Amino acid sequence: MAALSAHLIWDLTKRDFSERFAGSILGAIWAFIWPLVNLFIYIVIFGQFMGGRLPGSSDVYAYSIYLSVGLIPWTCFAASISRSSTVFLEKKHIISKVDVSLPSLLVFINLSEIITFIITNAFLFCFLVVTNYEFSLKLLLFPFIFFLQQILAFGLGLLSATLTVFLRDLKEVVGIILQLWFWFTPIVYVSGILPDVVRSVLVFSPTFIITESYHRIFVFNDYPAVTSLVILTAITHVILLASYALFRALEKDVRDFL
Image 1 (spheres, rainbow, N blue to C red):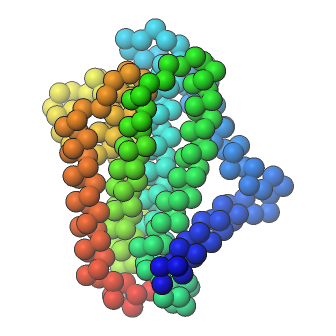
Image 2: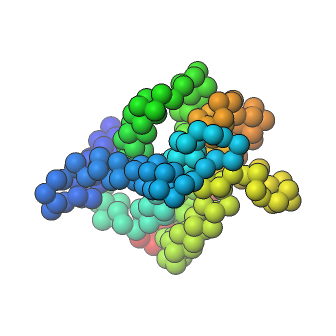
C-alpha cells in the first residue's frame, strides 16, 4: 500500500509538471522561465524601476530581497492550499479505482509546488551571489522555517479539501481568504507601518511569523525570535493534527460524496 502510494504520488507529480506545459514548444523549460520572469519582476520592476526602498537601509537591492524572500515562499504556500482544496474532486476518478490514502494526494501538490519553489530560489541565490550578498549561518534556519510553512499548508489544504467535498463553493472562499491573508502579512510592506493594535494581533498569525523570520534572516541578518518559532511550531502541528482528525471523522462520507 505504501509503495503503491509512493509510486502514485511520484507519477502524479511528474504528470502535474508535464500537463502544465502540454502542447507548448518549450515544454518543461517553462518551469524555469516563469520563476525567472517572476524574480525579474520582484527585483527589477519593483526594486529598481518603481524605486522601491526599504526604510532604514541604503542598499539599493534591500527592498528587492525583502520582497523576493516574502513573495516566493508565499506563492508556494498559497498555491499548495488553493490547489489542495479541490484535489479530492479532481482526482475522484483515481480514488474510485485505486485504494489510495486520500491525504497522500495532497503530497504530490506540495511536491510540485516545492520543486517550483526550489527552482525560483536557485535563481534568487544566483542574484544574491552576483550582488555580493553576505551569506551567514543564519540561512541554515531557512529550510526549517519553510518546512513548518509547508506543514501548515498541508494541514490547511487537508482541511479545505475535506470540507470542499460537501461545500463546493468553499474553493472560492479559500481564494478570497488567501487574498486577504496576503495583505495582512508583511510581504510588500514593513510591519512597522501597522498600528500597534493591529500588529499585536497579527504577531500570532503563522504567516506573519514565517515572513518576519525570512526577513530577519535574509534582510536584517538576524535570528528569528525563538518565542515566535516555538509558537509557529505549535500552531502548525495543532492545525495539522486537527485537520487530520476531522478528515478521519468524515473520511467515509467524503468517499461516499465523491
